[in-house]
Image 1: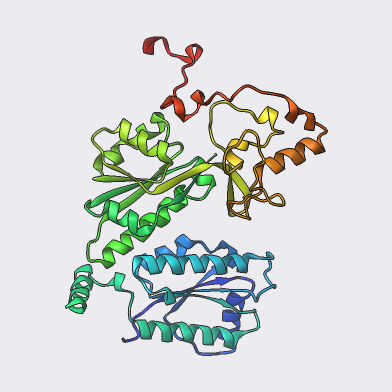
Image 2 (image 1 turned 90 degrees about the vertical axis):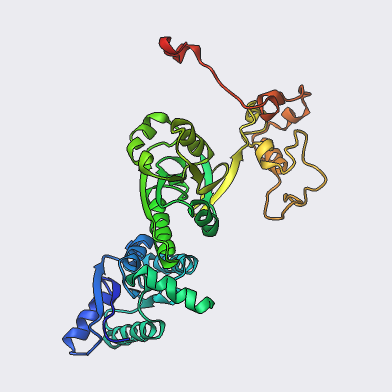
Length: 149
Length: 226
């Protein structure tokens, strides 16, 4: 798989987004395939956001919120953990690998942790391959047919 | 309110599999409040089904719409055009909503996406409990506002039974004994003597024993419909 893939990162403005900002300030390098979306809290993360991302062809989704116990809104990051789990169940049901979504806890000072989280998601995508929803459905069908034979 | 939960994804998939154009119809009332079939659930289910069928090499045109109340024809009429274009309607309403669609649109094939579970309320966030059995002859005034029909596993009118252990039901230790709750509340309110009163048998004809039920209010009827 070449570098033509996309990872969406839903980042809390109080922590992970600031960590990404700091990573930029520190000139830390991380894969350019990640697209960062700032949200006011990972508690704002909706199951539908993730599903729409996958339906539109995203290869992976990472949700990055505050460290446990440090949520600016008290428990938004705990809610996000549960929603990510629900998305994993939905992905499993529809036939996509649940590993394509993952929750991270990153404080605003953890720039290098943000970089390693992005690299981790990249390696997951490389291992799983591209999101099959981006591929022509007939091709997917033929591939499945080949496997069954 | 009516409490429902979504059917297993595979069952839903099978029920719409033969169709190409599918309309998911959510309901904005009870099933929205219990997070089973509102606008968000309709959108999540529609997206999940679109992806699942596309991955199977059988992409379908699956759209969604949510009406304020699926159990009233006025609200269904607003989506008649979308319903007319669909080969199958996947209703995320309760059993009443599904039947309302079937009755209003005789040429439309409609399938349920939910299992209608019970009449109840949220006990805490994410937890719903049964409170009413719609028996048609309410006796809550005699039982301290706690329903023995819905909350006693045997729907006894003279409980508690011998299976009541330390306030819990023998069916499941997580179920509080309905009659223990009634007794405790009557005692707390100083009205235990109400239990000593001899009462006539309950009128079960108002329940399902009398067949499908119907209420007619002449004062509310329209003249042309009489």
